[in-house]
Image 1 (cartoon, rainbow, N blue to C red):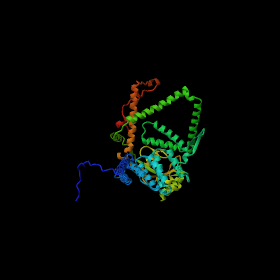
Image 2 (image 1 turned 120 degrees about the horizontal axis):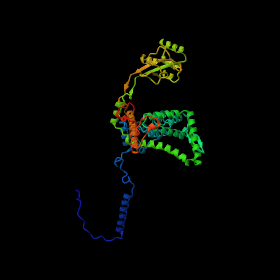
Image 3 (image 1 turned 90 degrees about the vertical axis):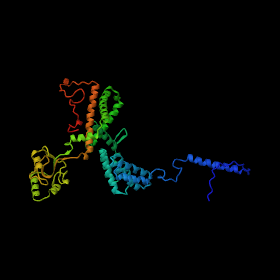
Image 4 (image 1 turned 180 degrees about the vertical axis):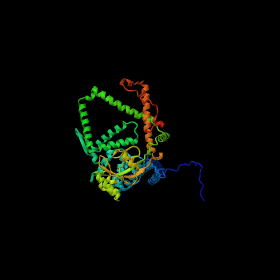
Length: 483
């Protein structure tokens, strides 16, 4: 039988007689233990009060739980958030270098899928270091992905250097070519990487000075410029120019020319241009908002711009003489393979590896033919020719005589809006930026009471004092064929 609890207040009893002071000592010891335990509670570091509780018990997910959620997000193509969780998993889990390298590679792919190419490149670099030589096939895949990230970032000079480093057998470390010294000025070294950055900065300044370009057009400008600077001779000349300017500027400062009135006047003129462009970009970013309705309206007004025009794809065999070209035509008519002849006998080294196919199609409109220029007769023959057949006469260009095959005809095709939504958005933003800039300049002209008198220059008046054209028609109204 259980004894009931006594909840009554105990009565005060007379203390027992003191037996040698032992009871007082026991009381003091108990008090000390109590104080020690209380102090442990207050001074214990966070998270150590109850070390027996698991991560799940404390309300924080463990490594395995984070991994599970990361995989779930990854399967649902929520790439950026999945990458975040995988990186948390890396911090918590105890992994070997090989395991961590594979996870880093996984994170890199997710970052790349999310369009975070700089972060993806960093993850690939870490993965490569961790994996070492344990997975050569995966290292090759990482190498390709690193190059693709650089391309997406528009770092064309770095693309060339990355590929050069990969091709260097026995290189001590990645980026070796970038650390090579290309010039010295008073003992100050300029490396290949620094020189490439100088070129990239120049290209960016040139691209950014072209207000209103779409992202596609900007990337095309960057690519062409970097391709031009890939030529070793052009790079050497540009290096010479940069070093010359630095040396001259250094000497000019020694002579205090930077303090002269002439220098200040010229600097002011340059500064005006830079400040004006900076202001336009700033104002465009504030005002140049684009809605989904704007994008769809722009697409509807420019369907021809986004359509794939009708065209014909052709292949050719380049011959030195007309007689040789006629011989090739006869042999093909007798059953010889056009592809084999193009591969083995064509004088055009750029197309013989692709069965003679020209990369640029022949447009349906006009008279232009790649490699020939305007040629109405040849254009008509190609457009009217039967697919997979050759033309029965050779045609001459500046390169020689051509045997031409009609590979295929393509009819005009309208690209659905959903397939090119991002391209249309970029073009719409570019159009909006130009419109905003024009309006902003007009406001400033009115505020500063600007008046222009072109008649004094003998010119016909073509612009008003608002800074824009006389037409008030807006590009964004949908009446413009191009943004």
